[in-house]
Length: 390
Image 1 (cartoon, rainbow, N blue to C red):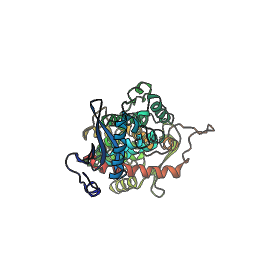
Image 2 (cartoon, rainbow, N blue to C red):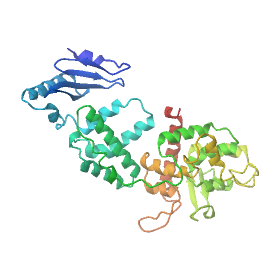
Image 3 (cartoon, rainbow, N blue to C red):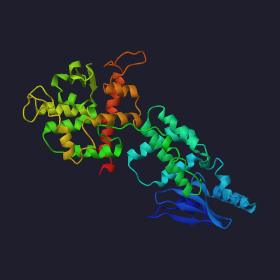
Image 4 (cartoon, rainbow, N blue to C red):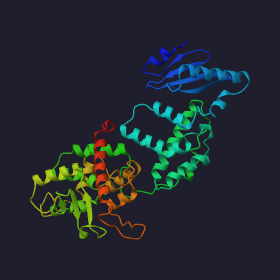
């Protein structure tokens, strides 16, 4: 029989283990640090397992009371599992918390991504429901809300996470069905990406680590490091002139003739991008081009240089292209960092119009875009230095 001190001081081990109380009640101590109350019983000759919550939210005294209540129902011929899952003591929010704790060690970026989807997209509508009350129409309505804001990839991930959590609940005897499979055919399909691009943070982190470890000419090394930070088209980067770089204002000022949409464009420079350009400026001032050809300083870098470098560092055709960094940024700025789509579209120099039909304005949201670009550069550093990229 357990006492409160034993429960409090129970330490993690290499494997999960149980501390038994009495009358079917035990504490499951997870190898990752979670402590879960479980009640084992039989009904109609079949062994069943019931969850009573997580310690310390549910202490020993509370767990024993719940066990005694369940045993009283058993004596009356009532299945306690059916009763408990319909009470507020076992909700989808509680199930999600238990699942999250049982996942084991994950990268910081993964933890942030999953937490954001749970807190923003799933728990507001599903959190207070008992797991068994989550039907296919209810889950689909939740996913539709995500799709309605254009976050199609996030909607798919949210459905996958909901299904994983509910299957975790099925294994623990806390619910009986997972409707996530039933609604997959009703989800909006993700548009095909024609220019290869990583849209998962862990993938991008590995790519950044590889490109920063690349050793080549200073110009190519600078080009491959700064491209993800600028959000411009590769051609716009290759043809960048020193006269376009305003070091005082910490921004690149591209004239209309340099742009695909024939509109002037401003690229705010994060401190990391400024450092790269300042170092490169000290290294060479041989010609007008910032990123010049190895054959002649009077010509821009070849359009294949960055793509060849990506293949050299281990990312073949079909994984990531130089132009794909724009799609990468577009996805992660929206779905992970949650910046307004209007800011992102303006920084990408897309042909966006406001509600009054006015065309793109190079200075619109410039202050906000400047902060966004610094946050983006900091995020790239975080991904590159994350242990998951090892």
